[in-house]
Length: 242
Image 1 (cartoon, rainbow, N blue to C red):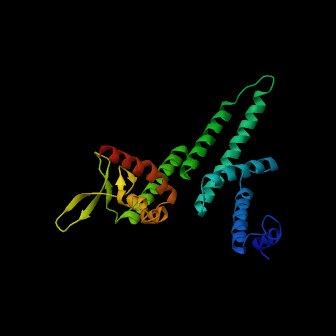
Image 2 (image 1 turned 135 degrees about the horizontal axis):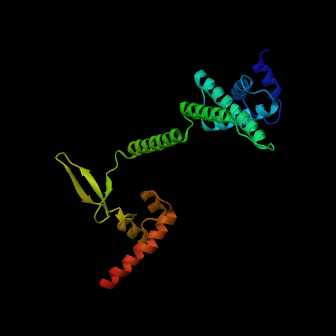
Image 3 (image 1 turned 90 degrees about the vertical axis):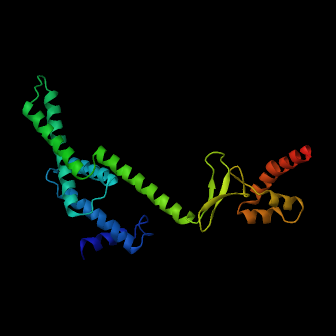
């Protein structure tokens, strides 16, 4: 039995993993084995404390990005190794500083600086630097906006109702063989979906508010609101003028 199947058998009967399908459990175990392989093959990880720190670093970087190919995984191992090396240098320097007559080694400081430079370069190669993340975030935002724009176009490509940029009223653009012309839109009052003849039919009890709602594609509560707040007020104004 290989290590994958052995680990699956250990986990599949545990409460936390029982609901996983065989495919999900296989993917989960493969990921964990790959993570363990990275930590177990580090050059500068020699004790439990360093192993714990290496696992923390690995989880932190995995949360930032995915490392699919072997070259990225190798770079990730090098990056974690450099972190471990940097911690060793800092630990030695701290011990020296706490002595009765502290004297910092210039050579040790230079070595730590070189390790930090290697960490930064490896982070940049893996796209983990702040600059790269900002670019990735920007690319993600632009990609999301593009998808939304394409989706809107697909869903509204046949729509010919537009808003006048000057008076803000809605009107139709009707296609003719020679050109496009603007026509008055009787389904809006300003930018509010509203049709006075439909409201009048409600008042005359020709149709119900529910039927009006179905015609306009809205909720009956919306019809109730515009009937009371717009139509009846307009009716009072018209009666007063007449």
